[in-house]
Structures are given as C-alpha cells and as structure tokens.
Image (cartoon, rainbow, N blue to C red; front, side, top):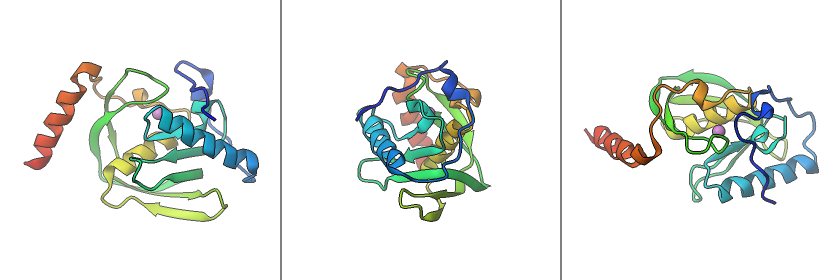
Length: 169
Ligand code: CO
C-alpha cells in the first residue's frame, strides 16, 4: 500500500524515533509499504517518520537493480572521509542542495528476519550518503539543516553534468 508522505514542517519529521523491540507483522508490513511508497515517488530511500511512524526503520535502494537495504534500529558506528554532493528529500519537494557527508560508513542494524548485520559501504560514497540521510531522519534531522548551497531545480542537470566532468579529470 502506498502511504502518505509527511512533508516539512510536519512535527513527526523532527522527533527522535523509538527503537523497535520486536519485529512483528506490523513492522514487516510497514517495510513493504515503505518500499512501495519509495518506488512510487522515485526515491532512493525513505525513513519511517516520513510515513508518519515514529520508529527506527529506514530503507535504501539506489537503483531498481541494486540491493534493497531494510534497516531496523540502524546505528552508524564508523565514518571516514568526506565529500559534498547534492541531495533532495521526499518530505521537502522541489528543494535540492549540497551536503557534506562521510564518504564511507559502517552501519549496524537488524534486517526484517531479526538478523544483526554490519554493512561497510567501502568505496560507494553514494550509498554511504543515502544511509546517512535516512539515519538523520530517524534522529529528526533533515538535509536542509546541513545544506551548504541550495541548487535551483532547473539547474540540477547542469550541476550533475559539471560534477561528472570534474570527476573525470
Ligand atoms: Co529525506
């Protein structure tokens, strides 16, 4: 089921979420619904507060071919390096801007089977960024709190093109 997305300035987006004690059918149903909601909105990640649930659940999938990470009670235990790139958020439509993030992280979480996992993003800075963005949501933090420069929506394509040029140098 596609869920309603809370938009800024909804109070729920500013609350620290509660850890989950027991992964029951409500939690797995929520994970399914969050996935459907994320895909239908063309997002690469979504956190439970964005669908009005004040609990520590977030998912990330960078592309439909990529692995889906379903993270329950995620905690980032290591951060390394930094890079600046553009972000957006399903809860803040039409706002885009640059944010500095760690380029590599290690995150610990439980999956839907209750298995405790540790993920090292290694050289995938985009995956590291997406997870940091979602874990921020679980702590009531929005990317606009950390935004360096806002990029007008109509300049996004130019920004990406310029970034790719720089990257290839
Ligand atoms: Co967001």
